[in-house]
Picture 1 (cartoon, rainbow, N blue to C red):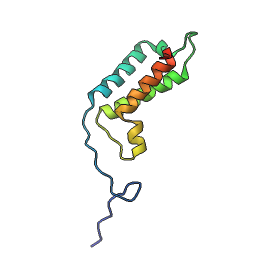
Picture 2 (cartoon, one colour):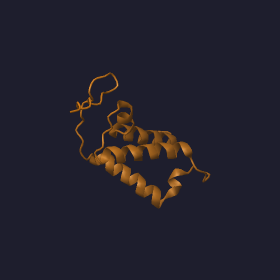
Picture 3 (cartoon, rainbow, N blue to C red):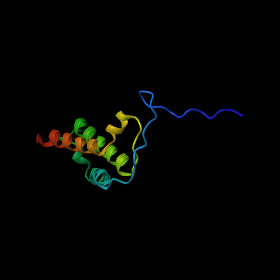
Picture 4 (cartoon, rainbow, N blue to C red):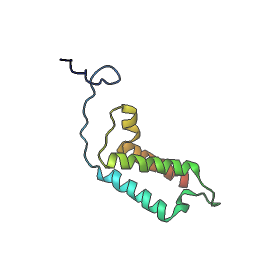
Length: 104
């Protein structure tokens, strides 16, 4: 009989703590809104001269990705990915996009 494999460990050697995952409706709705509005009106990702605004697009796509990942209830185990795809990251991406677009 072979021994059971050891459980996966986290960054500091401790077993990762399971995080409760469930649908996060505000993040999901924000992501779906970005996806639909960007599909219907792609000039949203352009600057005043009609050229692609890559900084704005990056911020909105980050917010959309974070919103979709967190919105469907997936919570990554590694803390870096967990923050990058959290509901707060979705808000940060939206605020960055607003600042890049309107200078708020």
